Length: 110
Image (tube, rainbow, N blue to C red; front, side, top):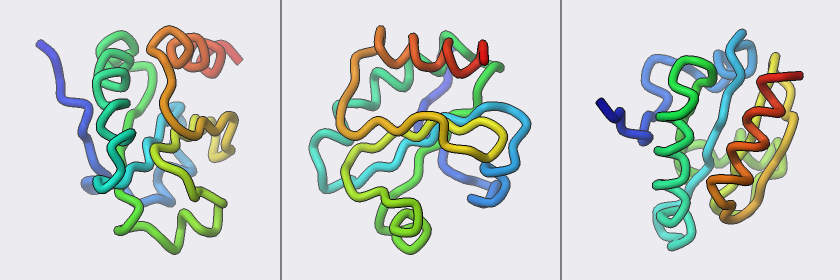
């Protein structure tokens, strides 16, 4: 069964993501930006492929503006790949599923 990729923080806080033992794919989106909608199917497929290996979370720029300014996120969509609280990779704009899959595999194997 496919799970929706539009998981939001829910009970997690941004701090929880930064200390997560599981690698995190954090998508920063702005619903006013059309490119944010283009990346959704790519992230859904990644989520299905890496079901329990990586935590996938989406956050809205407007809701978390102060935090995102502190980590220099200014473009949408932005994907942050986090491991042990560190940003291992930042992708600004859209990305193909193949390229994102490769980056996620690299994150998991390092």
